[in-house]
Length: 344
Image (tube, rainbow, N blue to C red; front, side, top):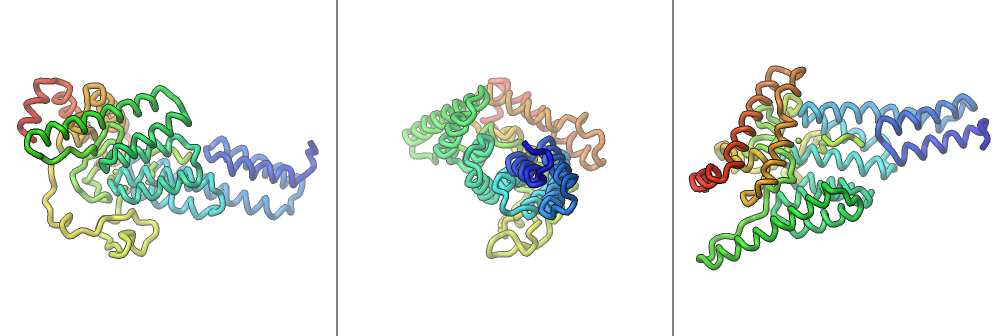
């Protein structure tokens, strides 16, 4: 009510920053703090908060830009530094942990992705996107019951057609998995299928390659408001850095966690299947195949990488070719049966 009350302007700016972290919110918060300092140039808390917001906005934009360019290591570092800007801001922590989880997904560091997204949900249990992201991780791990539970929660928080469709597809996937398991058991106790690799996971070349290797590929950021970041491009350095055997993260808090496995180093790279290329399960229906293809093609179309480095352009072209080949095979029922017979 009083435009000359510096404290009121300060509190308004702080409230905006603690509830929103997109570009519009940070800009509004900085505007209120500027009014505060106009009224009281010596308002020290306004100066400190303004510095924090400036630092956060710069790191957020850096992380988002790196994620959009597929530079997972750079995105991971930026998001990690964001968390230190204001450790008491739970809303900020929730969104940045969600983004960093997305980066870990791109690098196929599933455990670290799950740790980050669970912390994000603990900070803000009202974020539907966080529940859908965790559901993707559960699906990749084959835990369809947990995935469905999270998708149900997401649909309750935000009952969009997309969330409802994701939930229904997860339920259908679990039903098909149960039916297939029963058929295999009746046929002689063959191993049950795992539910990993659903159409809801981020696009991934799941070939066991190093996350930080420019040639490994994403095995897709959400905005800061990724890259999140357990699913590399030129920014994904650090592939050869040794990690601590005790926790897998090493001494550098800004390094993307990497698995410590002798078998990983000795195993020969495996060419990804068409299902892995599109990031879907073997039992995925035609609708899921088409949706996964559209998402992957939109991300890796060469036109979106015109300003990238030569190496990134080459990688994008390679991925786009693989996506197109996989889709051409899996969308055709006859070709798909022949492919399944030859592969499995």
